[in-house]
Image 1 (spheres, one colour):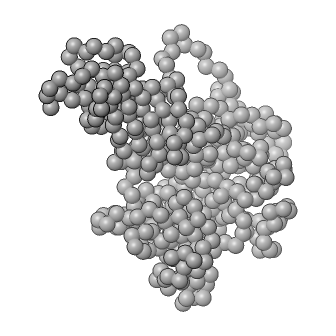
Image 2: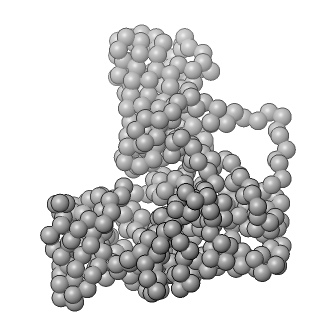
Image 3: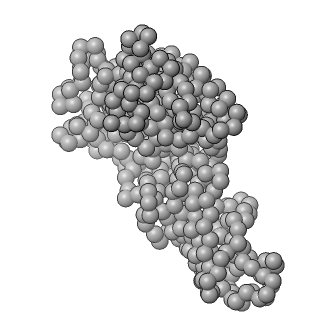
Length: 431
């Protein structure tokens, strides 16, 4: 039995475990005063002890709990237990869209287009409602879309009931967690298969990131699989950043144009709202053509860029490694040695940087350098990250064993180091 079962949060008695995920555990619960069944989500992250962090958690929890929409899970209470955020919410008895799509995939089937349109109309309504209140989900995916029906339970092996209704869960949850752990720009939150390019870079996100994720969900509903897959989370993120979505077999050019625009790399090229995306999809189902803007953006995205005569080498040219823990990427990125009368060619690689997940995606770097000249008395080597804009960040002294140096750096801000920096430099410094 879980250590949480049998405990109380306010008037809610925690029952059996429903599910356990990377961010949280979900339990059955009973509101002892109202005799109502609820769900209790207990987060893995701890809220920092300082009063500001706790006040920020309470403030964000109130904002999320204020969402009242038919297609959004209602939050009824929240608390901190042993420093961990606990959220009491509406209990929805039913499968997730993710589970239903998996069952279809096993049977080599896809959802009927009209069913897809009906489900996404409700999801889009919920998204736009929250976006109007400046709340971004940041983790739109089939697993966070629950299915309920008044006519009975959802049969994974049969067609969906006519009255099936999707309900978005975890709306604002990522924002709530970010508020408790003081994350910032440079932090990557979400699920790689459904992440927008700006999420993958750890950039600021707005409603357009949710629209991109909804486009991935639509792609999966039509194709039976997500657009980008790879052996590692990093590989998936790189495809979101650099590759167009593969065309879906068996759909019209207009429907493909909708997918192209929804999954545009640049946020300004995407649909302005979730409803706009779904309405164009329904229009195409009704035999109409896509809007002129969608057609123009699709044509632009599918027009090959002219090759430059002297293109700068891309950062991915230096990738040589694979997976360590969840994801690790190795770069031959140490190319500069700065110091008086250097005996090294500044263009000759002298080591490698390996990026790993620690608290967030690629926020840890392991640096190994070799072939360094012997240090003279009163000097030492230091490591520096250099961003594409030329910004420099000192990450500490390199420890030497013979002529091999090592340095481990974990970003205190949980910054995606690979997305932020593209060079590593070693300098000779006085003690």
